[in-house]
Amino acid sequence: MHYSFIERHFLLPTFLFLFTVIIYELYDFDLVVADWLYALEGNQWLLRSHYITKIVLHDRAQDLSKLIGVLFLILAILSHFIQRLSPYKKGLWLLFISFSVSAALVAFGKAISHVDCPWDLQRYGGTRPYLRTFDIHPGTYKFGRCFPSGHASGGYGLVGVYFFLLHYLPKWKWLGLGAAIFIGLIYGFTQQLRGGHFLSHDIWTFYICWVTALLTYCILFKCNTQVQTDRI
Image 1 (tube, rainbow, N blue to C red):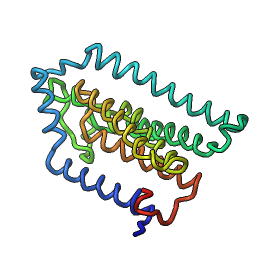
Image 2 (image 1 turned 180 degrees about the horizontal axis):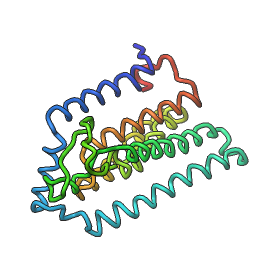
Image 3 (image 1 turned 90 degrees about the vertical axis):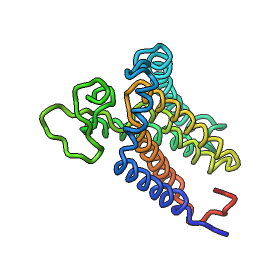
């Protein structure tokens, strides 16, 4: 049985994304999750400045993400000069472009977003009212610029590895996807524990990274029109 590549890699993820976002908006699941974490920490963001969450899993993790981006760029450039890397030239550019463009798109989204971080909200000891993603900002205070999750993009931006492996080593593709999701979840959950983001911010970030990697793959390799069930 054959399935359309676009159906599997774009339409289905988009449907799941939209369904999840709508449910989150309608039922305020962001607040449900954040309330639970806030209560677990004694009605404060106890882990906001903790060494593990702040220094190791945030600051140092950001440095690691930058190093990964530089590494992808170096490998992509070297693939034009080193024969051993030459067969992977397009794939290495895929990794760098999808990783860096994902981060740039998420950063742009944050720059224009009105959404506040949980730690800034009155509900969690801050000064600002809670606004959903699509609520209209009253304009009486500055935009929060806390959406989507820039930190999580350092992990989810690695979904390009899935498409790299899909092309060169398809039997390992799920390992690549799982690794990207695992790192993204760690980064994202770290920020949720610190009060720096809501869960929906990470969902948006993952979708942005996924679509960016997919489009990059389609541009560089051409989207396959049909893929065997055991090949996806």
